Image (cartoon, rainbow, N blue to C red):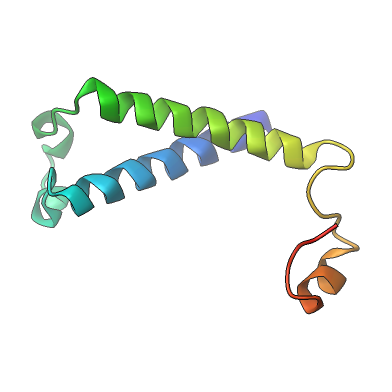
Length: 88
C-alpha cells in the first residue's frame, strides 16, 4: 500500500511539473517525444523543490484519507455524490 501511494504521488507531481513547464514555455511538446528528454531537460532547483513538495502533499493527503474518519467511506460515497459533492 505504501509503495502504491508513493508511486502515485510521484506520478502526480511529475505530471503537474511537466504541465507547468509546458504552460510557461520552458519545455516544448515536441521535446517530450525524444529519447533524450531527461538529459536535455535542465530543471532549476525551484522546479525540483515544487515536485518534492507535491510528492509530500500527495503522500500526506493519501494517508490522511486512509485513516479512520478520513475521506469518504465507500458506503457513503453514493449518497455524497447525489448531494452534489463529498461533504461530511
